[in-house]
Image 1 (cartoon, rainbow, N blue to C red):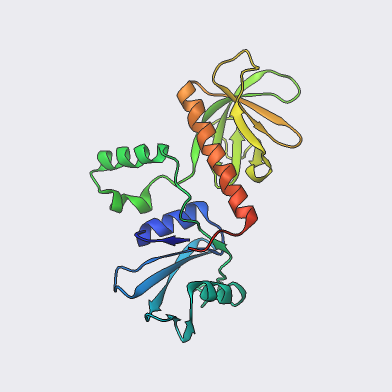
Image 2 (image 1 turned 90 degrees about the horizontal axis):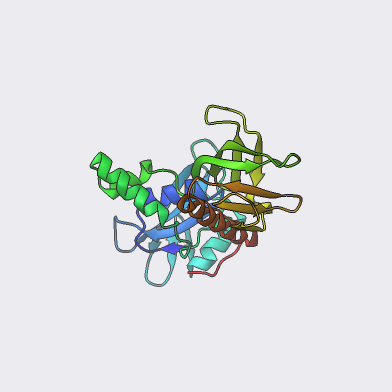
Length: 238
């Protein structure tokens, strides 16, 4: 959960897009060599706290700890200073440094930067939310096995589908923590199909192109891996 050269804006983007209440990471502060920043998500905002490394210990406010592990264990049980809204922040979910964003988002960020003329550092806070996707897919019905076009949105661990892009209420919201597999499917007469396997039902979906189907599969599989990490609730210490 130590992210060496992560910027403040990038930390906020990661925690807000892919984290949850209590998600945290540690990064170098750009203010002083002996300072680190602890970035923690609470509700819908990210708070940043300074940690001073004295050489032999880590100072956080009036507290002093012999290691970062000791600091985290302490604040996993005792809330940090509350935010302006009075929300108590507890260190619950370390955000692992080895989780990488799917490569398809690099092209999205670079393309947007070229269109706007801004640098990537300026772009991070306003970039498309990391780990999200939306678009039309053709879905097979549950009882009547006909195919209908539906608008799909993927955000955090939820895949929703709507009658069309203008609809405000989803037909259904699928919890990806309950999904066991996402894979290409060749059992249908249609091409560019893939399926999502849930305990009570397997959903069959088709994209317009093979590339689009591949993008959906990559991002959905990446989400399943992230779900497993979150459910385990622990990662190796940095």
